[in-house]
Image (tube, rainbow over all chains, first blue to last red; front, side, top):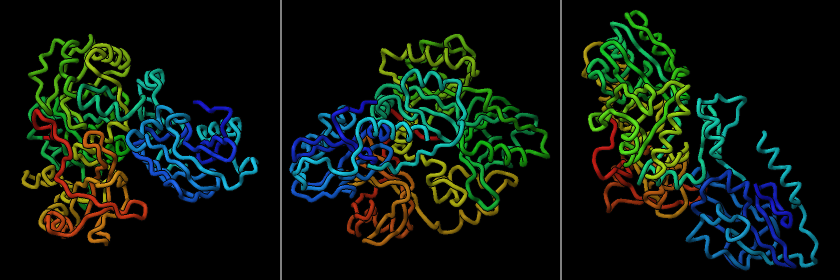
Length: 132
Length: 386
């Protein structure tokens, strides 16, 4: 299972890449493996407000549907246009072409938003979940 | 993201003779009815499509196998089950059910008649213990014995339009003589098996009952023979969507102790016309004569959000039933679902000028179209249970 060291993570299995005041969001490799083939993603629309820890969309897979939570506070600037036609990108490249949306952070101070996990912390969490 | 699937975890699930093979293949394993089973190997959609267009190989060793034998075995099964096993020709098989006295379904079954006095009853894994207990009790008093042979069999299914061509290279048995819902003893890849032309996918295919120690060899031989023909291993996730497309109910998702067979559209599996009494007859006769409480329908979702088990079905905005089983259909490219609804809602929805059916998908009404079951029927004939 892949957990890139430069990303941050949520306990709900989203990843977030922070570049200045812009955050990119997707779901983790662990999540896509657990879900199986993703068939539909309902992501928040550009311009929508998202709040850390609040549901902002859903991910449908063959087996289940899961809420998508925003890892950060801010305004959605862009939604991955490829996902509509090819939701399987979430499975094949969860940290790359399978990104879901981008957020202009409310807090432009460059401080790390609260509540996010580092790669080692997230890896430990998934180990716990796999063994429980 | 939080997952809301029903992946139950319990201590020490049972392993099949093929569990280590699945691990080596990189399968995602899951606890299904107390067994550690492959959920998927890589992509369940690819596995589903392989079965529809070429072939898939499945480990079904979790299914329960019960041998019923003895001079009165046929009569005992006529009394114990809703069908009429005494009327099955040796070498043929039937889909049937075992019901409680009140007419509720304890399990749906395939009964293979192997000889005049020898039957093999195949039960769902989750219900095997219930079926063993009920059959043992009901067969008591007849000159027949019930034995749980689940541990004595590995069960491998090869399903799909190329299944017969793939297996033909491994056996001297002329597979064209093995009809749908028939079985015969055969040598397959040098091993003695019971080869049955049955399955639960809506495709032509075979189920292979083998000794556990032969399972690894058979799996490897079939995989090698099928590799050039598009055969891939397929897991429970693909099996679920294949079954759903074929319109076959699944025990626990629409079939249960609370539902009489008629409501599930399975009245043809109840032989009220057979001679003699059978367990559940009185209750089932009343049910057959009464107006059904609910009707099983097929729905195709008009959005991409998927109706799932337990979601309300809405008729003109008001609840009229609930979804028993739903999934995105790889073959149709749209969400599909089976649901129980009030008969009046089903009737009105069948009228194009009537109101609108929808499914409450997590708080939002998603329009759905009523369709006849099954959602998928293979082109070359009657992929149905006999």
